[in-house]
Structure formats: C-alpha cells, structure tokens
Amino acid sequence: MSNFAAKGAWVEIHSKVLPAGERAPQVPQDTQRVPLVMRAKGFLLQAAQVGDDVEIETCAGRHLSGTLVIINPPYTHTFGPPIDELITIGNEVRAILRERSQSQ
Image (cartoon, rainbow, N blue to C red; front, side, top):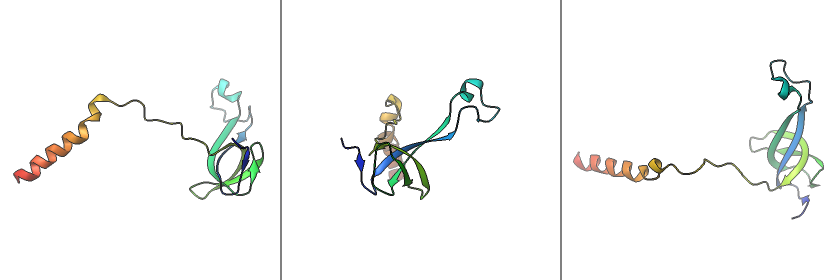
C-alpha cells in the first residue's frame, strides 16, 4: 500500500478542533481531559503523503484542512446483523398488495 496520494484521491483527514481543557464547561470532566478531534473524508486538493497537512473538498463541497491519515478509507459502519422478522417482510408486503390490487 502506497503512502502517496494523487490530487483528487479519496482520503481521510484528522485535525484537533479544541485542545484538552478548552471544551465547553458542561462537558464531563473525563471528556474535558481529551481534545475534540475531527475526522473527515473527501477529495484531496493537492498530491500528498500520509502525515502531510492537506486540504480536502468534502462531498458537500466544504473545504477542510487536517493531517492526511488514510488513503481510500473504507466504510466500516454496518446496520448490524439481519433481523429475522424483517428478512421476509418485503415479499410478504408485496403479496398483500398484489392480493388487494387483484380484488379491486
């Protein structure tokens, strides 16, 4: 895996938004002790290497700056395991709608 990304590459950046101790007063003490960080994905506006300070353009058109940490970052979220009751519901609803349209 290369550490070099060309202009226009899909990347992830990180940056510190607020240092520890400068968070809002209503934030719990354990949270106050760590910085507020931003992670964002977007298209690289200039060629760079992992670790470089870069600027990206997000899909919403925002320009953000931060440290390049991942080139071509994967999506790691899921909607969890399938729910048994929902696996067949699509076919069941279509069958009900078909019956209703045929009886009219």
